[in-house]
Image 1 (tube, protein in one colour):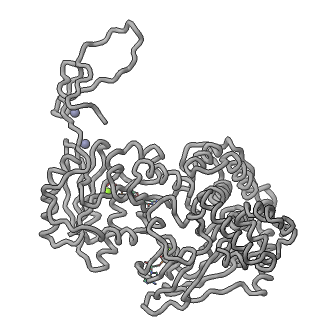
Image 2 (cartoon, helix red, strand yellow; image 1 turned 90 degrees about the horizontal axis):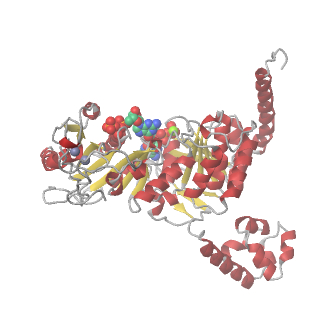
Image 3 (tube, chains in turn brown, yellow; image 1 turned 90 degrees about the vertical axis):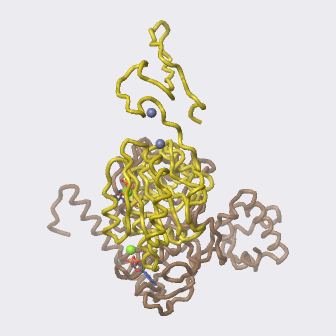
Length: 321
Length: 249
Ligand SMILES: Nc1nc2c(ncn2[C@@H]2O[C@H](COP(=O)(O)OP(=O)(O)OP(=O)(O)O)[C@@H](O)[C@H]2O)c(=O)[nH]1
Ligand SMILES: Nc1ncnc2c1ncn2[C@@H]1O[C@H](COP(=O)(O)OP(=O)(O)O)[C@@H](O)[C@H]1O
Ligand SMILES: [Mg+2]
Ligand SMILES: [Mg+2]
Ligand SMILES: [Zn+2]
Ligand SMILES: [Zn+2]
């Protein structure tokens, strides 16, 4: 583990293992928290790094989090529909990253997502292999509900249980055996309210939430309570929620976000974009400087449209826009 | 020939999942067939036929569909072999929560859907408890949280089975399921094999066609509810808890 730690900054270390603060304090390095950008290899000697690695491993096994902890997922390229080699040979996505998947209908977007969900071992139509933390994963990722790799959020999903928001979240927390459920419920509820814009109470029945409120609650709940490290988002463009903040919440909760979308704002918000053609990943691109600049403009456009919607709702005319 | 028994509550998606899954096996060049068991009527046989799947159906009528299943399963296996099938699937409507069609050494699948409510896994008994493989459907219309809660409830009832999520409409997960159906032992006959769960004796007078109500007409395996009546209420002196061979366990 010490090899892996070397390249992390102090900030990254503490984000991933908050209890590392205690170790730094015990070792007389509490002042390191004042230099969040410092790279560990430069501020700790190799012996201390090794001790830190051991400390973290012990804490993780004590907390029971080490096994589940997924820090990256790798897709090894297979073949396209015509049998030719997939152009992208390897794609690794780390926690906190957003990857968009684009391509025409029938090109193989869903198949790529299914390959990840099934942690393919060359045994799907694409011949792809999926690795977790660089290793070939075991069967538990395929068949054990506690180890499901992928959580899904899509436009068609609804709440069907006859429960209030509070009861619903408590039930989910209980089934996940989550620590400190009260705090988690409060956090999910307040985040969901921020995302939705139109506030709702903890005593609202989940089935009477509006579309936007439902989507907001689903995202906040998935971020905080879902066991799955990968979150798959399918076309939430019209969900009526703050999309940017939704993504930020997921990233902050150390999710890997994969998003099938053709919405320009969402697509440009991704760290990378995988282009699917003919059953294969044909290209992985990063947003260019120009695209990032355009994103600002797109957001302004979006905000204007949103403003027009509000005006319509208030019964105004749109003679001037 | 691989034999797979599929059961599950009505409308849970058994037919949809079987059709999507067998499509992958057909595409891989395997010969596939289905025997459908139901109570009074079913249109599933036409659906299978339309999808190019060899099919036979059996209607149990007044009998418990699972009892009817066991009495006919060996003949079905022989039909599958005579047709030269590589994979034979039986679909039974899980209408009897006391029974299950699952046979030892034959892959046992239970299909259950996310919409059926979190209490369902506990209620449906042996068909879920005795399964090797549990397919959860209709995940496309409920939230991630509900899927997780539901899967946890399923896990609570059956701690050993493999759990797979399949969408009966888009077929998502069905390719994965098809790879599981070709694992494991071949079945040449089920003669001499045993059911995983003994089927409860349904041997009261009503099983035999009695329609009149009243203690005088109740014979055989009859149990009376304890309604904790207010004291002083006149009770009718019929058979009390007469349960040969023990009650429900
Ligand atoms: N949304 C959704 N609908 C599904 C899914 N799977 C099945 N259905 C639908 O559920 C209904 C019942 O599916 P069937 O496959 O006929 O169910 P069954 O278990 O075979 O039903 P019986 O044989 O009558 O007991 C159909 O309308 C299917 O299209 C799924 O994953 N998602
Ligand atoms: N590399 C591949 N080789 C063979 N079949 C493929 C490949 N990629 C996708 N497919 C198949 O092509 C079909 C369409 O793919 P799908 O993922 O549903 O497309 P999309 O989600 O982009 O609309 C599916 O049946 C899928 O299994
Ligand atoms: Mg698709
Ligand atoms: Mg059916
Ligand atoms: Zn029965
Ligand atoms: Zn009876």
